[in-house]
View 1 (cartoon, rainbow, N blue to C red):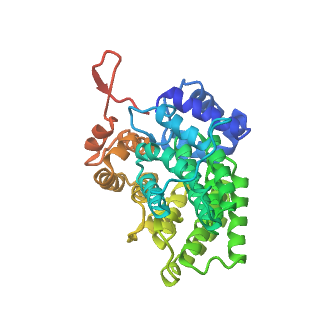
View 2 (view 1 turned 135 degrees about the horizontal axis):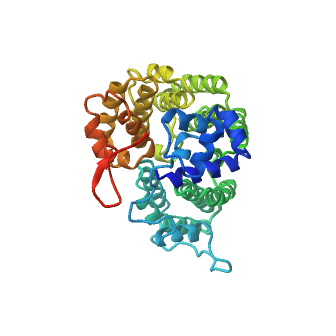
View 3 (view 1 turned 60 degrees about the vertical axis):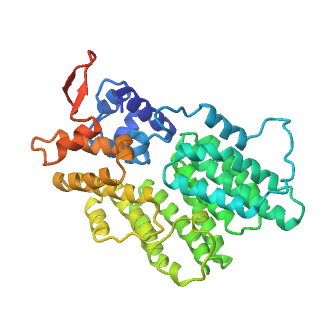
Length: 418
């Protein structure tokens, strides 16, 4: 990340947290002079421990400070024509035409399949592909809400809610959290008129995640726990799909608690979730797994690893990750995050060889994702600064452009990363 990008992100997140530079320094244990130099672009980045301390003081993920990996291809733009089309689908123009009933060739089954495919592409980080189909999905779902019978309209609103929920997730990945909340509010309205009792709590979970991205941790924790309690009170955890939705809400609440500084409470929630996740396979099966929340023993364990490494417990993270067997329904993106978190835990413990070995695995599994991920680059940059570089690091550094950097003249020069 360029100096000015890091400094701008730090300043923006500090102001969102209503902190002065002195206040952030006190909460993070980082000197106020370092905070000032980073914000003013006078300091070239910082080592991972410093960045982690700043992120913890701000109550955000480290990637929020470093910058998320690109959500669109390097040739695309967040506000290019494709994203404008997504905006129009979420917020149709004022005084625009009302949706007309679908034609004779319309099929609810086909629409549900297309929305499920969109979620599969989203979990595979194929955001360009999702944005291409989203406007059509939302338009078709809106048309389905004016179908003839009450049952058909209820099914149409369920499809619309799920399509708008997907649009909200994509908007978050584009860094447009306010647009995401608009999409999720409209998804909530659709859920209230739908035939799917699990849709509302799933959208609440997406809203909690968006609140987290905005630093609204108390709001995120509150709505996730309320939705989970409502589900339990209504007896909606007696099916596999219902338990998955409940479990995802508990995991979301745990993340908010950890980011608020209550790691112990978060750990208890995660342990409870992992115990409950073993019940999923024993309960009556649900519908399409692509349309419900991700919740299984392995997905909970991956989240436990992530929280442990993010909040200063790298030894716990490695113990949790050791010998893990991932279930078949674990999305590919979760697998790559696990490897990155394990690499970071090794780095935090000073095990450079272990970090390199894990990063080599990540490179084999998701090379393009790794190249664009700021945290992967930051880990390799820190390892490159070590006096005794472990075997295999040179190849990773060259792959990520850390070993050498281009000067203004275009000639290669050694990296002077601090």
